[in-house]
Image: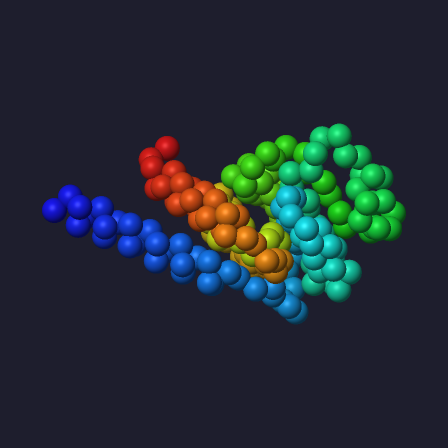
Length: 176
């Protein structure tokens, strides 16, 4: 009996992982939002956020999880952002250290600026967990558009992220 229960749990886990790995989200095009939030940590994320702002699909961009030693001028030079765009449209957040604190930092910025819709930009393999943390943290009246940056993750990256997603789901289900 215990062996069958263990085998069933293992099958559910394996099929869950398979579903996660084959259904990575895609980029979103043409949908406007009030703001865009970019989570640091992967290639192409900041470029995607800047592209959204340059296309006029969002008024402002908030970059969450920036290293405290990075100054705005260094950020602008690294990502070829004009001084005008940095001044009007790009805000850097230095408080977040993980996905959960990214959501908290972004929620505070969205609230302070009275934004009602946000485009969440992160890598495709990270979107499920990031979206879950944002849904848990943001007020329900803020509409979130998930805009994934396509990547080619290896099996180890997918495996680690799937387990983090499961851990986040379990911790979100626990009472505070």
